[in-house]
Image (tube, rainbow, N blue to C red; front, side, top):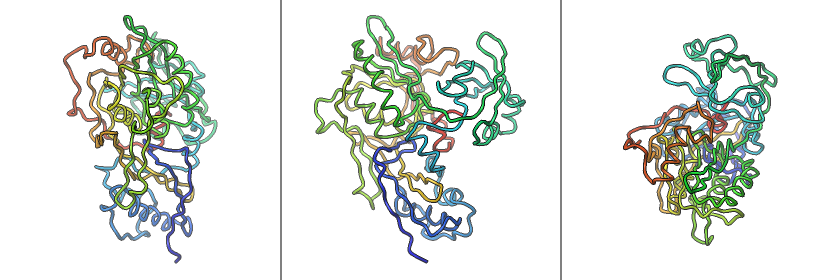
Length: 431
């Protein structure tokens, strides 16, 4: 049998931290796409590139495991690593290069009482072109009540297979109490990573508001209009709403951070450093804040956070702390101070944790999440950008008064939900 080889090729524009990737993908050259060879690929990548490679079993019977995913689950400790995964390579490329995925274009939340509410819709999607709005309650899906779907644990299958034009029928109730039905057909959704932006008049101040969903390459075409408007309004405080942001590209995070901090020099304004295991210290990467048009000179950045705020979104908070007065409103973030490189074989892309991230002051390691300075909960009864919405209302209060509205503080004792989500699903954040 020929020796296992790894061939490197560069995708310099795809840098992830939610599916955090660093500055290259790697194509794994295997003998065939038989399961045993795919299992070997997963094992040998982990032995070499994995951040915690020391914990991986040195030997493995590749014929004893049914798939590369099962091999991954067998080898890693999920109590520590909730993030490593294997996805379809074409879906990965479509998402991170084109900002697209196959779906219906809506996100929902299940409340403690079992009721299900729409959180947001993507504009260019079947849901976005229908009558569905944030704050609508889902009553039934394809003839099943929401309670039946919950009881059968069928959320992963109720929306059907990954097929173009697959139909979905839902019954919903809007905020006026009117019940209506929609039929949606699954198609390619173009993600608008900017869910909403605007200028809020908070006392005598103009405050910039940006609800931002995912760090994708397509964001680079959305940012200029946002920050041109902020700059024209003389904005010196920004509320960055990342309550739904599951992460994405490190390079895009660096771009957003550069808009939020007008650096005077490029020599030592380090945004983040990606640190690899002791076998690959020569792969360490340093990202510096860049000079760009319409950079803001901020007095304060207020970030709205939740348990879904993950990875590259946490990097924004951690990376800008040395430069800007950063406050957080909401609840603790997901806790992902690590990232992944991509390793391709057959039709798969394997995304194991390969590096940890730290800011200019060597701060990182927030596996329990970044705590919120002021407590607030999502209120889907109000649109994103509505000053009456509870999280935004609290952020505006903090902006005006530099303190929380109440004495209640969400500290590290309130842990984020530690559920495991597929890598691409966390970034898309919608069906």
